[in-house]
Image 1 (cartoon, rainbow, N blue to C red):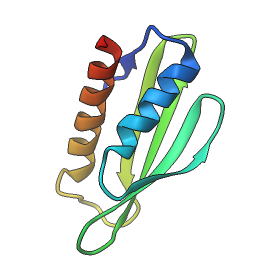
Image 2 (image 1 turned 135 degrees about the vertical axis):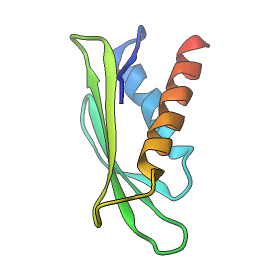
Image 3 (image 1 turned 90 degrees about the horizontal axis):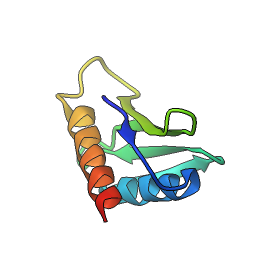
Length: 96
């Protein structure tokens, strides 16, 4: 997944990323640092947990993120679609 550039302050970019993540159903932040956060998202039916990492790269001025299933070898594209939605939300919030 391509990183999303940001022009605001790194802390503000992290806050936007957190808000964009929390717009996903059954997703919650489990740990947060100065320029990073870790979240978990549970599937609706089987309650599988996916891990999500967001890192603010202050030097490159981009937001890097990933989402991966904890179990199994295929998630049927769920994580990719989640990251596409996150990327779109971040781009929209930066345009405001």
